[in-house]
Image (tube, rainbow, N blue to C red; front, side, top):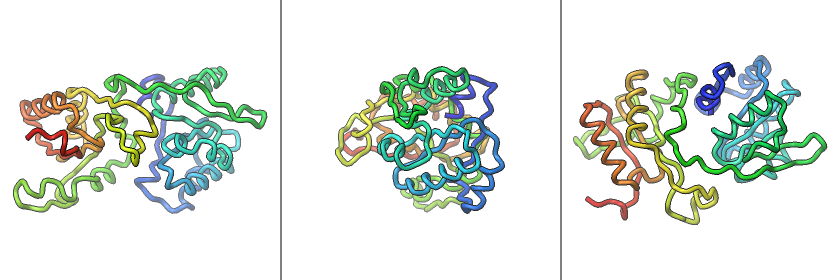
Length: 273
């Protein structure tokens, strides 16, 4: 989201306060919010942290009664009515947020009606809640800028990856832990072609889309050069669905001798050898 906003309008000042990574106590969070200066604040998360988000929005409203509060993520998308009925959210971003965030901030800055922005719920100022037309999923993921990792506490992310604790234990018989490497998570696709009823993809309804091998390769090289990572964990639900793209990615990594190991999740029925 930050990268999309910065790309659209370099004059927009974007700051990230990463509560999930830093895990500060609530008093510290409130002190940060009290002293912060902003026109719009965006937050979000998975639905299991609803109570924390509700508290957080209350603190933001307490110290910035005139600020615009935007919420995205699965909390906004899966329980929008609850969010509007029981929290201080002004606007909800439903589904993918990059294009919505850009259009929303442009509308706020220029005083345009919010009902011109697809993919949101918002308070109309008369005690009511309005919802706009659904936002279409982003089909060409390569059009999105790479994340602005420099805005995040990378020392936390590179030391606490999802997949680096037990990766490739079988390749040389050794078990590597977090202290042995600098790792980072990368998302190379969105959506899923399968329709498992227990999974949120079926609820979201977005088709499977993937970034090109070249686009993913460029991000990994950037992460290695900028932050010194030597392991990447792909957090795609099924990285190996598109065999041609995976093989192209592997070819780029091998041909350019990029010294980064990687791991991923997949499905047995997609494996060919």
